[in-house]
Amino acid sequence: MAMDRCHLCPRDCGVDRTAGQRGRCGMTDQVMAARAALHMWEEPCISGEEGSGTVFFSGCSLGCVFCQNHEIALGDTGKEITVERLAEIYLELQAKGANNINLVTAGHFLPQVIRSLRLAKEQGLQIPIVYNTGGYEKVEAIRMLDGLVDIYLPDLKYVSAELSGRYSGAPDYFAVASKALAEMVRQTGPAVFDERDMLVRGTVVRHLLLPGCLEDSKMVIRYLYETYGDQIYISIMNQYTPLAHVKKWPEIDRRVTEEEYDALVDYAIDLGVENGFIQEGETAEESFIPAFDIEGV
Image (cartoon, rainbow, N blue to C red; front, side, top):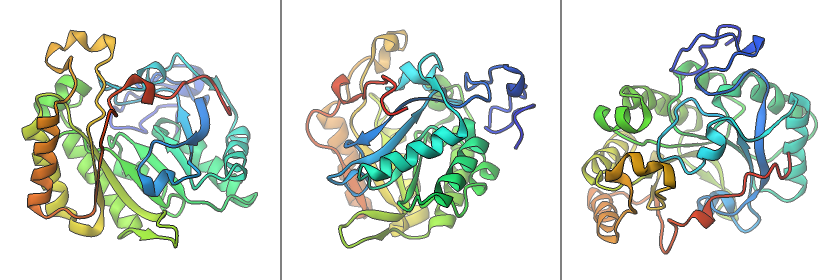
């Protein structure tokens, strides 16, 4: 998938990113990253005690209004790096004891990421590769990662076209994301863990409960369980944080209540979901959002 008329993502903006034009993702063809460090706040089977070697890429083709990483999603924060430097970063994180390499929102740099992974593997990268995505991906793009990615960590944010249109500008979100997810599960198969209970292969699907959107969240969980059963793990998240710019959407300018979250978890249990993760305590705090300060880049 070339970037001179970019169709990497479902937005199909068609701009010439190689000539310095910015796509819907906000990026040219120059890789930009905002942080590369050990990250302790992923699911236990991904972070472990040592941390996940997480690379946060700048820009995003989805652009959810409530994004906790909006500082970098807009493409205004980060440092330009070469493919060679990106490969070095993976190896540096491995040397620090990372349990895996966690690529956060990398889809708009897919050709460069693929080259960097191949280069790093040639130079001794051995730990699992995690592809961490908002889920709004083309099936053709995910197929390009077959054999390179060990763990998929996608969101499935909505079933409702109305909600996905309002909050992500993507009324086709579910139609697109569900097809991409099917390809991810096809590639990884059922979850595989090592002797430390760390995930080495598989798919973990995240769902963030939004304020007032409990019924749609139930549809998401039902779809996942009825479609994949115990092939995948479902991570039900309560960490929605209403940042200042969300005031334009007053209905989501609040945190999720305990009652809303408990109702969703109870629904999942009643369905029969056993392979899952839930969040407890004060996870909806801005302090859980990492500092995008170019560390490790």
